Image (cartoon, rainbow, N blue to C red; front, side, top):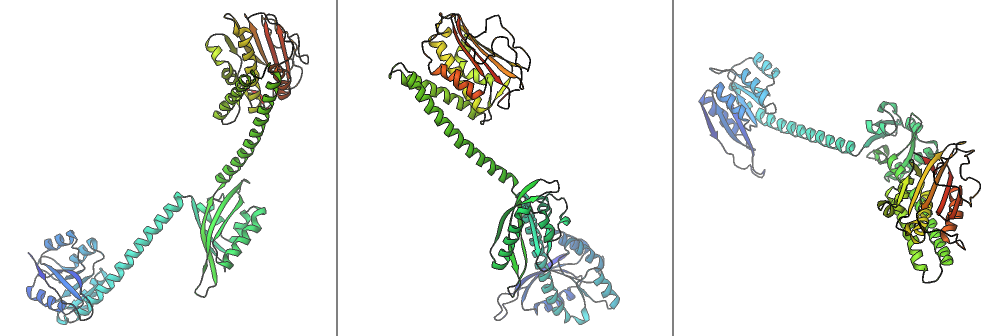
Length: 507
């Protein structure tokens, strides 16, 4: 059996509306329930809504529903139930709700036992006037206690969010006490210094030991300035990790002052910016490299224009020849850009120049994998372009049955290059590295051969054009190798012997 006694209190004069308070009353006596109601009505700053239950089951159901209740009042002795059992149920289900016994049973021992079990207070019905004071005090204490609990929970949640944000941003936190030089750091802050345990840097002096010697004085000066001026601390400096490696950290923070304006400490965050610094260094190197490449490219374009104009049979022939060479230069740059200017392979350079003829079955390309740096790749591409252009206009590629064989090999010191059935001695050899002569010294060489066949008879030119000068002089100078170019009747022959180095190396 359960019933609800609805009560409402008027506004206290000048104190605003009363505070609503929902009460769960466990009482089997109707007279005693009315008595409790009358005393609650005397508390004029609260409006009580009383939900009365008489049995164990009704009490359990009311508590299980959660109310929500602001106060529980209970008799100590009931026909099928006892107050101590009700107290245990309430403390388990509604631990934050005040529980007050209103009992007809006298005895200090009962009251002490009830308080030990978690009751808020114990009121004897013979002294019911105490109920007003006890209830008011219990409600105020519960409100304050609940507010404090809520604030603690909110603070814990806020701290958890802050920790999550710091960890997500890889930010370490730190706090410095100026009077003792005591330093407290988080695990991430210690990791930014290459340390696994924050206890390894308990003081500011220990931190300074981790700062790069060249940055130590600057770091101290920035801290002193932030403390004296109150300005934000924002600095970057190098640290030396236990393994000897150098890393960068960024530190931000502010000084802390007491009520008299005296500085007491500092607090802030730290971030490992080593990757960013390395990226900035790479970007600077790339800008410098880009500047160098632009200058080299402009110089090369200027040289191509000058030499093309000098070799052109007429002014009208200049634009086509010049534009063709610029396109070849642009092709090489496109390939190197795709390779992030990390060089290219000899096979890629050959394919880039000769691709149309290779697909037509007019050119055969063969050789082991060879890596070329950017400068060598551009030079060889321009040389192949000149050879292919000359072959298409006047040589083997101008005839239906003509063909070109381009092959290369890596020759070790003292080793003789492999001879082919086609006579490869160039009548106008450069410095003697012709035919089957061996490579005598150094780290070895790349021997590259261009041979034309099946085209019209070749006659030596009466004067050297741009292509011949590029191959014989420019290529030999750029690659520091030997170049032999011969215009034999059977077809043009070109042989390059390039010393192996960091610029030309087998894969």
